[in-house]
Length: 368
Ligand SMILES: *Cc1c(COP(=O)(O)O)cnc(C)c1O
Image (cartoon, rainbow, N blue to C red; front, side, top):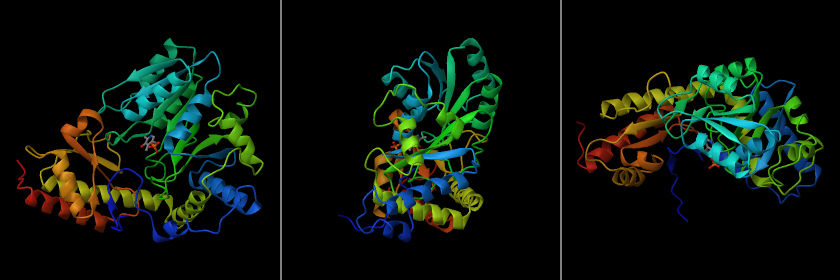
């Protein structure tokens, strides 16, 4: 096992504090004892408080990667006989379409290319044409490219059309401003290991209590990922299956650290990280592919320089302790991604730029 302390520039799992890692080492604990339920309850309450949901919101925890909570929301929210409208401008929008289809839920797809944010007016138009659609599903931050979708505006448009909204905010919750109460937003999903700076293994659905209660009695499409089953159990300080006990202990520590830093200050730190990274990479000749105005402050997709392949660049950066991230699909042939979430600071991002400069030097690559 490598003992190198990598600097993770992939969009989660992100670098965590020493205290978060240490929180994994706890006395063995039974998940049906009050000591565990107290951890679960504190995490759920803190999540709602930090996301500014207010009293009529709740958090439902799932053991699994982020996709577990997305699948739980998609397969639980849409009532029988209704359908889902998915906004798709990247891998994660596309994943929601595949989840809907796997569960036999009819899905309308509003597609854009991966560099174009969704337009709320398009959502309104599709909703008017498709009265059978009960919910709109949209990704807040498309981690495919670093593109932000205007989810609050989409939720307001959907509310005017009498439909409810589900937002995948996996790589943006606590890293970008997000009003989870905007419009008809009912469900928002994220995981422990991205902007929360916890350990992978737990994801969650933030939800309006009314929307959760409305699922009661609806026939489940999944045994393991039914949202109401988990909600009802967790409300009674119980859990239907064995949760990732230690990961939740680490998540409690990560939430405490988030509370200390403050969500607003974390968002500002990430934004400063992105500014330092983008200014430095610009000096090295790297072009940002997402248009200005649609860029998140969490992840940047840079075009590879002429004659520079992804793999040599990845390996040169890795020799310096930095893990960059390939593009998904054919993007990897012309671009790569750098995330600035996790415990990274603007000073760290300055060092990242220096490592890129040294890597280019080593590879004999000069900016055009
Ligand atoms: C990371 C991520 C997910 C979940 O991915 P997992 O590998 O299942 O954790 C879902 N949506 C978005 C936008 C993401 O960035």
